[in-house]
Image (cartoon, rainbow, N blue to C red; front, side, top):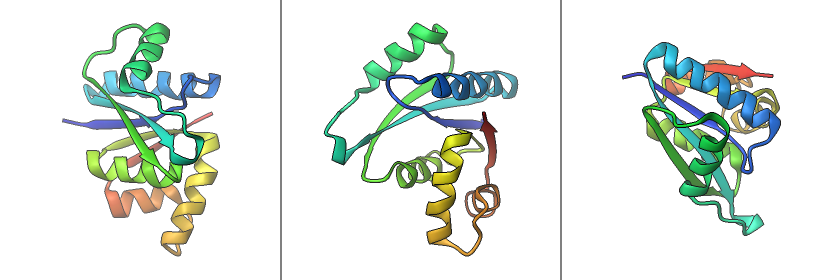
Length: 132
Protein backbone atom coordinates (compact mmCIF):
# COMPACT_ATOMS: atom_id res chain seq x y z
CA UNK A 1 0.00 0.00 0.00
CA UNK A 2 1.20 3.51 -0.79
CA UNK A 3 2.41 5.46 2.25
CA UNK A 4 2.08 9.26 2.51
CA UNK A 5 3.90 11.20 5.25
CA UNK A 6 3.11 14.82 6.12
CA UNK A 7 4.89 16.78 8.86
CA UNK A 8 2.82 19.49 10.57
CA UNK A 9 3.13 22.00 13.37
CA UNK A 10 1.02 22.01 16.51
CA UNK A 11 -1.11 23.91 16.96
CA UNK A 12 -1.92 23.72 13.28
CA UNK A 13 -0.80 26.86 11.50
CA UNK A 14 -2.48 28.12 8.35
CA UNK A 15 0.44 26.72 6.38
CA UNK A 16 0.21 23.33 8.14
CA UNK A 17 -3.52 23.16 7.39
CA UNK A 18 -2.89 23.78 3.68
CA UNK A 19 -0.12 21.16 3.60
CA UNK A 20 -2.29 18.67 5.48
CA UNK A 21 -5.27 19.29 3.18
CA UNK A 22 -3.07 18.46 0.18
CA UNK A 23 -1.73 15.31 1.88
CA UNK A 24 -5.25 14.12 2.72
CA UNK A 25 -6.33 14.64 -0.88
CA UNK A 26 -3.29 12.77 -2.22
CA UNK A 27 -3.85 9.89 0.23
CA UNK A 28 -7.49 9.61 -0.87
CA UNK A 29 -6.61 9.74 -4.58
CA UNK A 30 -3.85 7.13 -4.16
CA UNK A 31 -5.89 4.98 -1.76
CA UNK A 32 -2.87 5.35 0.52
CA UNK A 33 -2.26 5.26 4.23
CA UNK A 34 -1.38 8.62 5.75
CA UNK A 35 1.03 9.41 8.56
CA UNK A 36 0.61 12.83 10.15
CA UNK A 37 3.85 13.75 11.90
CA UNK A 38 4.69 16.33 14.56
CA UNK A 39 8.14 16.81 16.08
CA UNK A 40 8.50 17.67 19.77
CA UNK A 41 11.78 19.55 20.00
CA UNK A 42 13.90 18.71 23.03
CA UNK A 43 14.93 22.33 23.47
CA UNK A 44 11.40 23.74 23.74
CA UNK A 45 10.29 21.44 26.53
CA UNK A 46 6.79 21.40 25.04
CA UNK A 47 5.49 17.86 24.65
CA UNK A 48 2.48 17.37 22.39
CA UNK A 49 0.78 13.97 22.52
CA UNK A 50 -0.63 11.93 19.65
CA UNK A 51 -4.13 12.42 21.06
CA UNK A 52 -3.67 16.21 21.06
CA UNK A 53 -2.45 16.08 17.46
CA UNK A 54 -5.33 13.82 16.46
CA UNK A 55 -7.90 16.08 18.16
CA UNK A 56 -6.54 19.17 16.41
CA UNK A 57 -6.55 17.48 13.00
CA UNK A 58 -10.05 16.02 13.45
CA UNK A 59 -11.39 19.39 14.65
CA UNK A 60 -10.16 20.88 11.38
CA UNK A 61 -10.78 18.03 8.89
CA UNK A 62 -13.10 15.56 10.61
CA UNK A 63 -12.29 11.86 10.89
CA UNK A 64 -9.74 10.69 8.34
CA UNK A 65 -9.61 7.10 7.16
CA UNK A 66 -6.42 5.04 7.18
CA UNK A 67 -4.40 7.56 9.18
CA UNK A 68 -1.64 7.19 11.75
CA UNK A 69 -0.56 10.00 14.06
CA UNK A 70 3.13 10.09 14.94
CA UNK A 71 4.88 12.35 17.42
CA UNK A 72 8.67 12.09 17.49
CA UNK A 73 11.20 13.78 19.71
CA UNK A 74 14.18 15.45 18.16
CA UNK A 75 16.80 18.13 18.40
CA UNK A 76 16.35 19.11 14.76
CA UNK A 77 12.95 19.03 13.04
CA UNK A 78 14.43 18.20 9.66
CA UNK A 79 16.46 15.25 10.89
CA UNK A 80 13.43 13.80 12.71
CA UNK A 81 11.34 14.20 9.54
CA UNK A 82 13.94 12.31 7.49
CA UNK A 83 14.03 9.56 10.13
CA UNK A 84 10.23 9.20 9.96
CA UNK A 85 10.26 9.13 6.16
CA UNK A 86 12.81 6.31 6.27
CA UNK A 87 11.05 4.42 9.09
CA UNK A 88 7.69 4.58 7.33
CA UNK A 89 9.24 3.72 3.97
CA UNK A 90 7.22 6.61 2.59
CA UNK A 91 6.25 6.65 -1.06
CA UNK A 92 5.10 10.28 -1.00
CA UNK A 93 6.15 13.09 1.32
CA UNK A 94 4.07 16.26 1.42
CA UNK A 95 5.94 19.23 2.84
CA UNK A 96 5.29 22.94 3.07
CA UNK A 97 7.35 25.36 1.06
CA UNK A 98 8.83 26.80 4.27
CA UNK A 99 10.15 23.35 5.23
CA UNK A 100 11.89 22.86 1.89
CA UNK A 101 14.68 25.34 2.65
CA UNK A 102 15.41 23.82 6.05
CA UNK A 103 15.40 20.27 4.68
CA UNK A 104 17.70 21.39 1.88
CA UNK A 105 20.27 22.60 4.45
CA UNK A 106 20.20 19.25 6.27
CA UNK A 107 20.51 17.28 3.05
CA UNK A 108 23.36 19.52 1.91
CA UNK A 109 25.23 18.47 5.08
CA UNK A 110 24.61 14.80 4.25
CA UNK A 111 25.44 14.87 0.56
CA UNK A 112 26.76 17.06 -2.25
CA UNK A 113 23.27 17.12 -3.82
CA UNK A 114 21.24 20.01 -2.32
CA UNK A 115 18.01 18.98 -4.04
CA UNK A 116 15.53 17.40 -1.66
CA UNK A 117 13.60 15.67 -4.39
CA UNK A 118 16.71 14.05 -5.83
CA UNK A 119 18.01 13.00 -2.40
CA UNK A 120 14.71 11.47 -1.30
CA UNK A 121 14.12 9.79 -4.66
CA UNK A 122 17.55 8.17 -4.83
CA UNK A 123 18.20 7.47 -1.14
CA UNK A 124 14.70 6.77 0.12
CA UNK A 125 12.81 6.08 -3.13
CA UNK A 126 9.96 8.53 -2.51
CA UNK A 127 8.22 11.38 -4.27
CA UNK A 128 8.11 14.87 -2.74
CA UNK A 129 5.10 17.16 -3.08
CA UNK A 130 5.68 20.78 -2.04
CA UNK A 131 2.72 22.91 -0.94
CA UNK A 132 2.61 26.68 -0.76
